[in-house]
Image 1 (tube, rainbow, N blue to C red):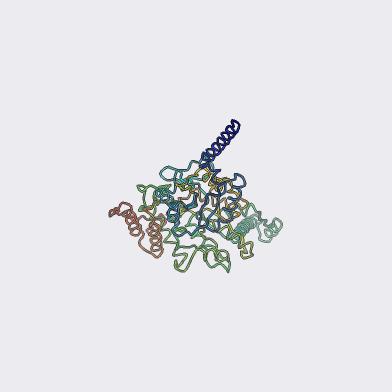
Image 2 (image 1 turned 90 degrees about the vertical axis):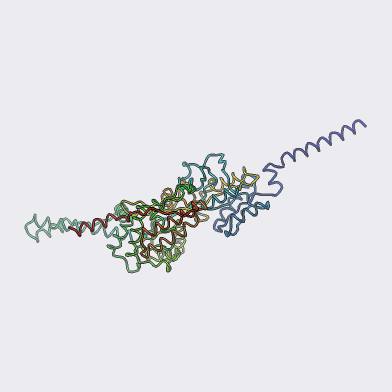
Length: 491
């Protein structure tokens, strides 16, 4: 009997230990996955599917933790996340563009990341990426990939021009030598014999061509105008420079260095400066472009502009980073018969600097997630550890700055991204882009720059402050070129 009692007692103890062990571990991440409740990653861009599914598979193989990527509609994205989260069915982490981060943070859907390995810093990411995921001095997401403006050019056309330029300079040098020989020989016949004896075939080296191309590529918008005036374009070229003037993303570089909306992080409503003399000078140069490149905003789109570039109808255009993959695909399909080059955006002038707009897509850990440690570990894994394969799988360029690409042109986009201004995340200024786009359209068609920019600033500041805002009227600045022309006329 004693043996039976002892046996029963031991069985009860073992059951109790097992029960309490399971209970103690019921909140552990390991138990979460053993109970077939994987973490969910929500995203809206179908182009990411191959990459996120591959990352989730590899992560499970390495850690045993299961992540399920879920492609959802981009319409009312954050609202859908919020509703699903309140119902207990929301994602544990999600991908979103940086302009939505304030909204996500204030809704409790985003919070400060732990970044246990300390990778979200300037050693791994450019300043633009860090500013994009910063809100009120807190890092609230992991930078993933970016879009910004780039200056595309038809390299075949520019190389041919470079070779012609080198040969022309060589011929000019020969002409000067011939004239000197005539003077030295005393007769034209003797000089010709001497020149023929000394004549050499002009050999154009790749190094010379590369150096000449660097000189030819316009460094400023004003140099684009000079190029257009002097360039003897091939027959198939319909426009030297053409871009989507209807979309603010491709126009913003003109004023980006002189308009401030929320500071570098785009989260400070006390740091808004729109109406100023430098911005007006930049817009005056922009307006002048319409005299040389008559582009009707209603008749162009980004896709049509890029297609014309692929067909060799334009020499220069403004594009976003996605253009590289599209051109490479067209080249592989035999639809692009040229070579192309990528440069950083030209400055407005020698005096006025340009600065592009950028959008950084980031991975956010849901603030209501009960398993933040695993969610954050996968966010780091997907955005940093596996980032070297992102471009090959999606055509999107990682925000990581230390990745070496086979296509060197991609590295140029990073240089533009590094100096770009992230799209602001303040909800108070969400309508700013629509109003700015309208302002650019009006200025392109000849509207008064001073009045248009002042009205824009007053409209934005009235919305931010909640009271009617009036700007002190500034004098309309005169461009240096106009001052020089007036001086020449007076002389």
